[in-house]
Image (tube, rainbow, N blue to C red; front, side, top):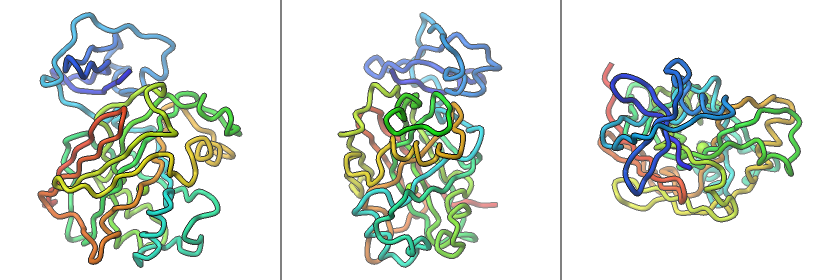
Length: 290
Ligand code: MG
């Protein structure tokens, strides 16, 4: 099942997407609950769907969880080939952890950085000269918990979405901690919707990213250094996960800093990320004017 958060007539709704018909059917949720987006559905034991679907062309998609309750957890250097390209880029303030980390590198992005499919991502030249893209599988937690065993970790997953972990490389390198470089306003495109976990085979899901139509990233979740259960168990070892938490699982090789010279994003560039079984997340980068 594909579940979208969207706006229609000024109201936020959560609904089931039928891609073949090009429609979305709203869940029967009070508007006050729907403000939490997909989080409203996760919090409920049941919800029925309206019988009159709306064409997707008549709604404005929002991020599945438009404003997460807290920071989006992220994993760095989690694909072997990307770990190599990042280690040799000169921006790797985690270099001491080695090219292939022994333990997951976990950082976060602020909730306010989340934007939707087709929203503009802002490039503010007064702050950064090195904006880069990172196509990633996003995990959405359905059942909270602490001290989660890897063998039980997937029981805690509601489903998956696509995240572009947009990064200001110069800030990431300069400040050692990655938070500022990862949390610039609009730097967390998420969507176009979420899918329930039964739709994704974690052992074989293709992730691709194109910039202006040029294929840059093309990898498979089977190449993750730390798999989804390991990531969940690592975070939840001492941090209680809550329903609606989002975890970005890391990006494969082919980001802008993997090229010589680096291929940073410029105003007008369009990043298109496709994850098999989910869909396409597309965002244009635009110059920010204060
Ligand atoms: Mg990333």
